[in-house]
Image (cartoon, rainbow, N blue to C red):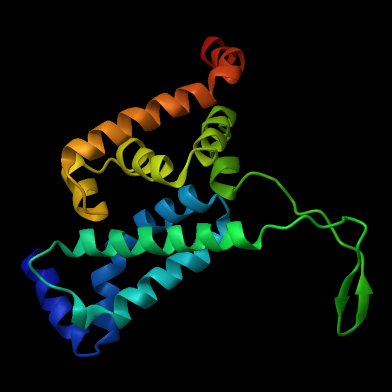
Length: 199
């Protein structure tokens, strides 16, 4: 940990909110990108990112400084994402689109959720990326995480191993299996993806 970060951490542990905000400034974008890729929904990712840093702030005094602060932050982000994915699985239920929603002001017609791509995808105008994102979302939580951390966020094998607390060899084999699964998920999109390359 850099000396400046150490100083900010010491102040933040004593309740200095400004020091905490300065400390986490460099982590916010990356944490948001991780939550967005894991969850696949812009609004949910924004809320979860806030939750990550609230939990980081509340848990500062339990942080053991022999570990990297960044590793600890990303571990918290990972756990929160996995918890949310488990909750979503439990919440999933079949509903009728014709069923009306009861509110304090009466009943309203159910509207189908807008499935437009997230703003960052629209801004990049990159349909190929959208296809790959959907394929990543179809992977298991375990495979999705290592693909995001290694191939999208650029974490080293060592960093990922520390975050998920397993040997580097396990991380490497998991990434290889995840890449194979992703390739299979994209197999039926081969012609479409090829079309982007030759345009």
